[in-house]
Image 1 (spheres, rainbow, N blue to C red):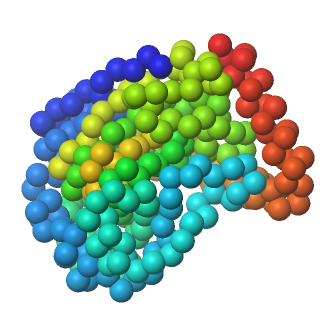
Image 2 (image 1 turned 90 degrees about the vertical axis):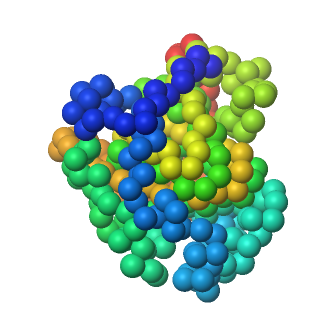
Length: 287
């Protein structure tokens, strides 16, 4: 892997953000974007337990899903408060993602400000919370709706690996899915280049997010995240400004995913083998 450090600023003017990062589809970290948000100090483990601890949520372990499994299928369910208490106590290879906590506690939306000066198209009905225990992993994928993301870390440290969408074949993307066949867990210590040699040529970025850091992930960026410490973050999503970008997101969300789910249910073995052959053929061509 050829990795660069994500550019990081304490402050970044919206005009410079747009010209140097948004328009060029380059990730960047802005440390000061959230500094005026009440959420930065107000949102604590106990605060979340008190207001939404009784809600049942899906939790996900570190085992990579196979090509037979529909995406976003939870591995278990538990009360949100119970999960948060476990996460605080030590290593826990369970995480929660795409949790719209704001549906259960709408007062939380007063604790942050939508940064409309940086980009347009925010999907303001769906800010999402992501939580992970120490050691939890979000495996390499890109977001199916192809939105731009502002991802703010509130508690704990998280290691993030990023690649532009164009690197998809070097990353061994599963056709008709948003996932990679390769396992990037602990990539910074050891990666299986023997079985996934094309990854050697992939060009990307890495960064460690800490309290208050906001990462801009351009639309379609592949990302892999590892929780160095237990923590939680919020993602604000913004649709692409172009019509083609919006249509691409709609197709992947409803068309691509629908076809893939249908084939997994109808012809699982045939579909699995066909996709796997394509994965390695595409990787060889990309080398």
